[in-house]
Amino acid sequence: QVQLVESGGGLVQAGGSLRLSCAASGRIFGMESMAWYRQAPGKQRELVAAISSGDRTNYADSAKGRFTISRDSAKNTVHLLMNNLQPEDTAGYYCYAYLYTTGGQRNNYWGQGTQVTVSS
Image 1 (cartoon, rainbow, N blue to C red):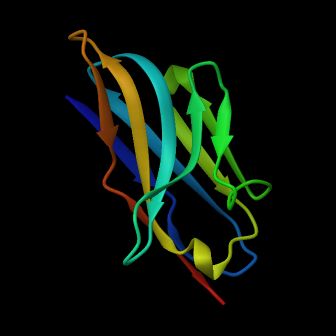
Image 2 (tube, rainbow, N blue to C red; image 1 turned 180 degrees about the vertical axis):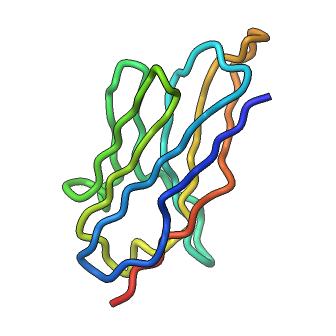
């Protein structure tokens, strides 16, 4: 009923930039918040950045000053601009949405993930 599709991952050298995008579609009545998480091999999934319906943002300490999250509410999309990428940023990046469906339910949804690899 709701799908999240990420794009924009890839291979980049240290110091480079990437822009991730996530589009939510389906039976969406209202979007509460959207976020990006990441998971490196052998590690737990962690929050990178989040943005609320009121455009309040929250960043992990590792992302502050380098990453910027933004959203297009009309299109139910969220973007993550990542600058000055470092090898430790290498991970699978996952889009997350907390929303109301047209059926009146409030649920969490995850995308399939997009790989970001930063070479030194």
